[in-house]
Every structure is written in C-alpha cells, then in structure tokens.
Image (cartoon, rainbow, N blue to C red; front, side, top):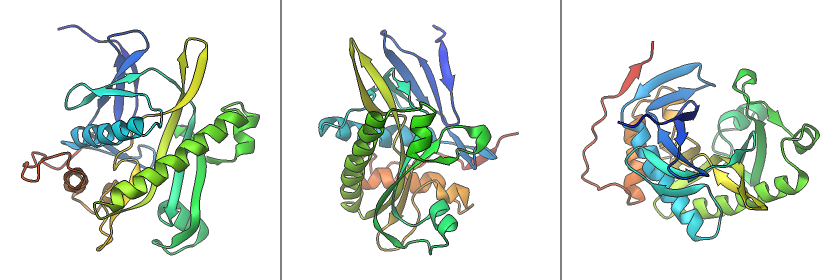
Length: 254
C-alpha cells in the first residue's frame, strides 16, 4: 500500500497530497467537535454523510458558475480538490437569529432577520475564532478590499442558492459558514469556495416542526446527529430512502 503524504489535519478533515500537482485529497473524518474542540466525540458514519452532502452542494455550485475547489468525489470518504491558499477567515451568513447571534444580541432564537447578515471570524482555535471587522481584515493583511468584496459576493450567491435548494425539500436555511481560498492558475488568481458545506457548517431546521437537522444536535446534546444528517441527505435525494443506518452512535474520545 502506498503511504500518502499528509498535508494538514483539522478537526473534521485530513488533507493528503493529490495525484497531480495542484490537487489534494480531502478525507472526511467521523469526529464531531464543538466549542473549538472542547467537546469531542467520534460519531460513526458522520464523515461519509458530510462527504456526500458537500459533494452534492459543490457540484451544483460549480454548475451555476460559483467557483469552488471541488473536482470530484473519489470514494465514500474522500474528495479530489484543487489546492488553494486558504484565507484565514470563517464567513458566516445569517438569515434567522440563532446560536451566538441570538445570545450576543439578546434575541429570541428563530427571529427572522431584517436582511441576511454576513459576519467574519478570524480562524484561530486558540482564540476561539474571534469575530472581526473588515478593518481588522485589511489592517492585518488577511484579505484585500477587493478580495472581501469577492468573498461577500460569493456568500450572497451561495445563500440565495442554498435557501432555495433546502426550502424545496422542506428545510429552512438558518445560517451557514463558508471558507474561501486563493486559486492560482498561471498568472491569474481568483477567490473560490473551499472546505465543505454540510450540516456541520449549516443550521438547518425542518420548515414545519423546526426540528434541528444540523450539528446543534451535538452541541446541545439532543442526540440523533447521524440520523438528522441522513434525513438531510435523503431529502436531497443523495441516499436511498430505504438505506439502513449503520452507525452505532457517539463514542467518547479519551
């Protein structure tokens, strides 16, 4: 067996050297984390579902002209992606008050916002990913004003697409997080969507029941994490309605 060179390992994914220059293999782990890894379990089957859901979304984004790092899914846990220079920002788009926004502003969770809000967070686990402004981003050189404009334009287009996609299967898109990177092609550089888009990075509520179909089930100890992710995949037509669930539930990481 050929041993692959590991490039990077995060909380939920591992990046390996790809088969061609400028490519990487992105491996989806079963790790479930919250509160910047202060809570950590392994949930069997989670990585497979996130891989499939993220593949489905990124394929559609590519199809409608939103540039991403995604090339193709390789197997149940891995994707072939383009190598990009990650911008150290988490870009959060909020449509409905939930999570930290509701807590920070004293709002009732579920309040529809006057308009979609875009927030930026500096990617630094040791600092708990602090919220930052455009002034911080440009002052510290994390991204240029033009790059910020490009990122915000991508975020708005993705929000429009995802809101319609999920609403069509009875799911409300509360908020979501994306990451972006610089893709260098010869003398050209463009901003593309990277990382993943899955129930790990979105808040998804059932339209009728407001049942949570996302990682809040893990954050808030509601249980049924994999079942919720599988429900999202089934509604999107990614997995067969009768496909059995093989997970055994969370296993505590020592």
